[in-house]
Length: 216
Image (cartoon, rainbow, N blue to C red; front, top):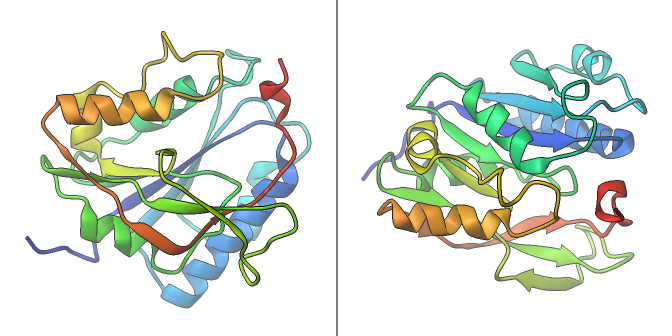
């Protein structure tokens, strides 16, 4: 099987009251775009009513031209990750594009999109890299932490296959935290797809304080 560098990748993030991390994420993606000249990706941000940042202004100031902001704060004042993910997935029409479910608290390696393109095959495989979770005070330049073997939060798959699996379970994984990624992988297997698991040597999850919706 051959991979193609011109397959469009939609990078999806779900946010609420994470202004500084949104700026960090956009700085990372801006750097990637400027250095790679990759014209075959878009950013989709699903926002649950953030008031600590104007996401539109940040994107308008960036070199990125292909982006979409979906506001869910009025309909869902409380952060519901699975609802946000499914809303973003449903907003993408092209079944031949790849959707990369990402997270604010990661760096954005220069090879992350091509890794998704190389390891996702329509009707055959999804990709969820094994990441390094950094300890407190560790940084990508001085990494110290552990490989998260059983975490599947970063996930890439064709839109066609997301539709086949039915997306994330927003009934059983609505307000509690965690577990939706494992359910998604189980659903992928149920639909006779394989999951590529590879240690990404430079994909780091930053240590951060507990998020507001985790304290409820």
